[in-house]
Image 1: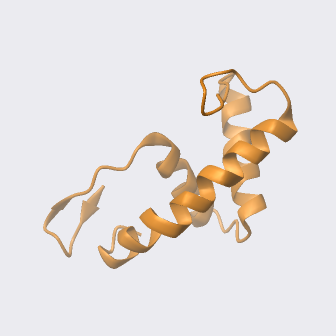
Image 2 (image 1 turned 135 degrees about the horizontal axis):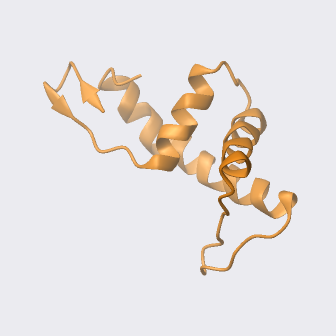
Length: 87
């Protein structure tokens, strides 16, 4: 994604892009953001995998995984992207 501060781009993976879309769609809580992303995965017929590569079967497992990934995103990448004026 383009950063006017850096005068270049910052690599943002697909999942990070979906979290950004959730924020821009006014999903305020972590749970709402994870739910937003899960709905997109479901609509596209895509599946989430665990850290060890196993396909997550239940919505509860998917939400737990997304919440963990989203917490990492909020902690490390989101502040960087905001400082770089990407979002």
